[in-house]
Image (cartoon, rainbow, N blue to C red):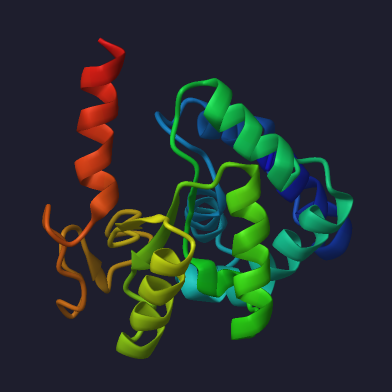
Length: 191
């Protein structure tokens, strides 16, 4: 979602006005600009002491408000766009959908019908039971398995280490993730 939508919500709902110079600085940050960068800005401006506090006080609410506006892509549009660009559509952190098992299976079956290729199984917030459940769903719907540490930088998530997650709860190698095996093959096929 566009960061400006978040900035609008912060102004409207909390009276927080982000200086134009800070907005311009946000857009100069390389890579994806999202809530983690906005959290760091709110800390810099003195609204909170740490990233967790910014999410609890402001950014979870802002996210809900921004999603309700629905100015972003639909799941159908997103998957189509990814596939048209030659990418592999993967569902990141399925636990964030907050669905019960049967509802999640139906959603993933639908996403698979749209072209979903992969589901994130390995994630620092997923416990062993959830990982097994997501592996089972991946097998049932013939989806590749992806994963990651959800590392967003030491300032954003100081408890997560790149490559090992939270307290070493993520182990990723070529044998763990079928998606990492598939992508090099797709790249070779395309060239």
